[in-house]
Image 1 (tube, one colour):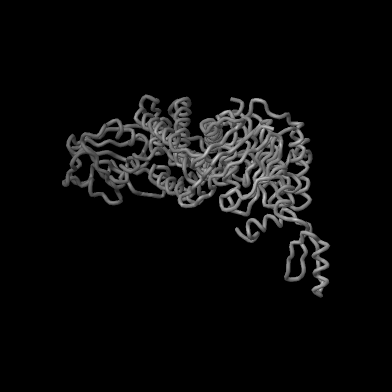
Image 2 (image 1 turned 90 degrees about the vertical axis):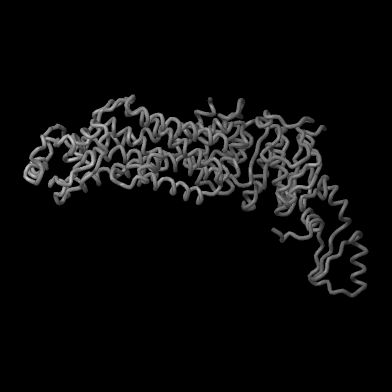
Length: 334
Length: 274
């Protein structure tokens, strides 16, 4: 235990005193969030996003309206999900061609135009109008969980994975092997130190950006904290599994990049994968970060409880256990 | 005195490369044992097997007459040839870190005194000079109050002054009764520090004896050198008279008492091998 705490302390000091990396880990995500919030605050796109339930109706003039993106949904699609999209302004309107109903959000700035288009274009007379209500989710509200996820992914994979490979290459691991410290104790100490570092930086990023942007948080902070912890654990576990064998820093660097870039692009960090090819969406469901981001967005933007995001929590937990098992099985000091 | 450690028919193969070829020797307690040899002779592989870092292909390693047990790690001090230290922490913090690994670590004050660390205690590990780093690594090696200390080429790359300082530290540790095992390719170092010497080449142990015995066994008298000529003179008087009688040109003559360097070259053929 004495050895364990000493190692956690040494590893943490190593990070905090490396002022370059430390500042980078803190400031990069904050600058990124604020930058994006600024860049996307103008809402320059005039495109309407309209969901179409069921097979559609070619006689409905509204469905040919210009400057409109139509997103088809199966008739069996969960209505609550769609209503939420409408409330959060992810959809400007939703049309059900079979029940002849359309929904709009009474707080949407495009609602009046959409109403006019619906009523005045061919075939729209028979439709009844339904209203939902909800303040818009700004892009930045949606982005924050993504950037925090990205930050923790880089922090864990490079901070644990890459560093362990460097330790192996430059002989720190060999020196540890010559002491009575067990591999498990050493690895756990690395993981625990990194866990607290990433947890604290994530909280700092959250609180720091919230000062300027005051973003939306509908759920419980405790749930979010638990999710965050699980997300960090899953990435540390992945880092440990990756670092269990590599001897070469360049190779480790390449492999970590090979893993982080797809996760950054296809886990929904910066943009939603909705409407992208199905294969991409399937791929994204295999990425642990997707599950962390989805769950934390649901907690923050929709006020979901931990029980409601159980599938994501289960995926992350299993992923973590599998990676830790792999790491323990594959690990070599040299 | 009884051997603190011994190896019997110790062998290490890496694929087709025979790094260490069934060597046997014993190290009496309390001495300084020097393992000499050119680069690639198998010195490091041999001591890393003795340290328990590398598994032998075959053969036996005994510590106080018994095979090595896990508790051996608490009784051994190790200084590797190449070790990076954790970055961004100071010498003192590194010593504290490693002290936490052992049940009865050597008191900090004693470490500082034995390894002359006073002036660098609060310096970042990354900012140590070569000699300072070796002192620090030696301190790490002796933290566990080891019964035996392994030093793998501890003075390679140090300037002459730093090497001599380091020898004093090794003597101080030996004076406390700790057995020291040292690899080196500096013969003066072996001559000054070691009580028993093993000379290795190509994985074989060529010689095992005290420095004095080794020299008297291989050389009698002196080496007389003339430009382009080297004579082993058993009787210096006869040799000189003979040279005068031959009418040889004695410009450039030097007389040299054979040392380990000469023995090393005689046994291993060349120093210029990597």
